[in-house]
Length: 66
Ligand SMILES: [Cu+2]
Image (cartoon, rainbow, N blue to C red):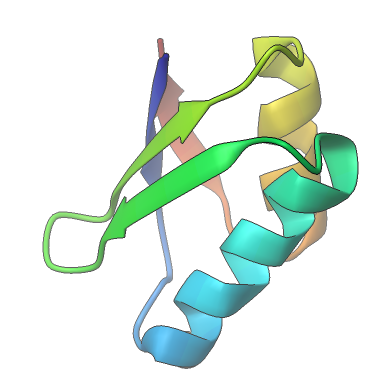
C-alpha cells in the first residue's frame, strides 16, 4: 500500500479527480482519501511512480509518497 500526501485537494470533486486518475493507471486500485489531512492511501499493483505521475498529471502536487 502506498501513502501519499497530495496538495490542493479541497472538495469531493478533487477527491473524485484523484481517484479517477489512479484508476486510469490501475482499474483495480483501491483509493482512500482523507480530505482533512490530504492523505491518499492507494492499494495497487501499479508502480508508485506511475501512481504519483497520474495524480500530479490531474493537477494535484504530490508532496510526499511512500
Ligand atoms: Cu475540489
